[in-house]
Image 1 (cartoon, rainbow, N blue to C red):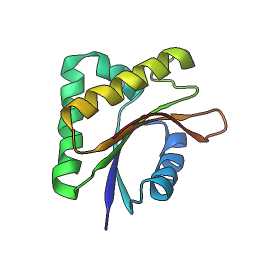
Image 2: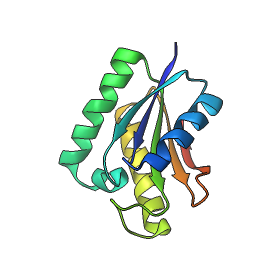
Image 3: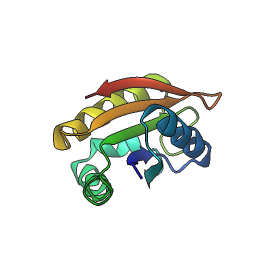
Image 4: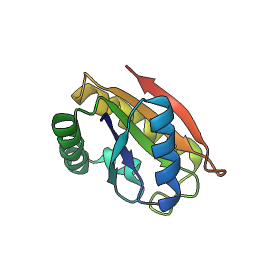
Length: 124
């Protein structure tokens, strides 16, 4: 059984598309899901970033997750800013996680208005 980890919004519309995408593209069987409303905006604070990082490390250490997806999405109630700003937050979030978890692939995923997954950034 291979695990991956998704740092995702709580919005239920994003869960299944992310899990399916990770199963098909990251060769994982299960996805540990870390959720908060508008999660990519939380990376802007060192304190909230550290709390998210602690949870990701549990997935990495205990489940061997070596593929981590960070997710932002269209029509986010928890981060009601435009796509351009969310994409910038998403890129920053991926870069921050990659610096701290060097042995993992970290990708930034955008869920569009049709609930389709788009890869924004991938750091190996």
